Image (cartoon, rainbow, N blue to C red; front, side):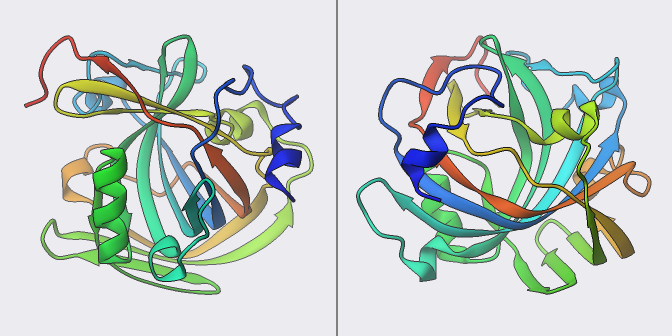
Length: 245
């Protein structure tokens, strides 16, 4: 589907797409979502005070999303596969800011070192390199510097034709908020609604020592998606109330 067609389909969005011209396009493909309900007091340790943690029925959630980034490119330039295609794992939570609901990344790993360097430099998102490998039904990652380890084996199930409110709350997010040293950065995105399948986890090992008090059990909810084509706008900055340490 062409970008113009995607931009014309907005009924599923909670607010209108930005008026200004978009800056990047990309695809988030073969995505596995692992979701945990967590304690608010523990999550608050990782989220800047300028951002309000979003709650579903009074409870916060964190998610690990493992997927393959493909065809990421600036507007008017072609994708360059050695840089634009790579596996990614992000650990995120859900927040509210500037009258919008969005996500906040606690961690982002990429499987290509150069891609991580470029993405971090351009976006100020907390990209870092980890060694990754994926096959049709397996996804692994390791980072010996931080002792992070991620291993899953899974089987994709039937398509979810009737999504729950929680299904949509966890996936339909059209803004990203991230903190840098002196600012809170806002990114707007647009895509069609995520197509969701059930997924059966055959094996899972998740070890992120920094977040050991958040991810303490097997996921409370899992999802799989073939993916979405994504349009992104430029970064907007606003000053922090206190400098990041």
